[in-house]
Length: 180
Image (cartoon, rainbow, N blue to C red):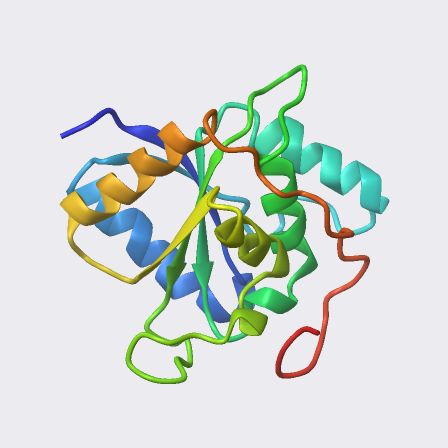
């Protein structure tokens, strides 16, 4: 096995909390392959200004993580906080280096066919980084060897491939069946 990585978990809190809990239990508690980190509901005051929330995410929650895992459910792409977490994690700052990036399709994700997904139903910034080779996508697995390999590969890619952080940050949560 390779080194454990401090892994930030980004997800849709209202829809996919049970999968975040399962991910932590399987890969941190049972198999001990990651050091999990996530923002919990209520951790950040909602009355803060947008830029203060973004800075808090980067400086307090992502500062020493090495890989960000995005748990992709049916509406994850709509969430502004997921977009901000991805953006912050792939940006190197004076306080921290960038994190690797992995997307994991949840069992609830609506695939078009067996292994075909609609790229307009995953977070746009994640899609951009899959296209440039910085991030990879995988179907949910309970296999710790597979998941650890995905995370470690993302860790190694973070300094070899430049991420794409060019799309405009979400101002609000989005609606609809897909982004354009």
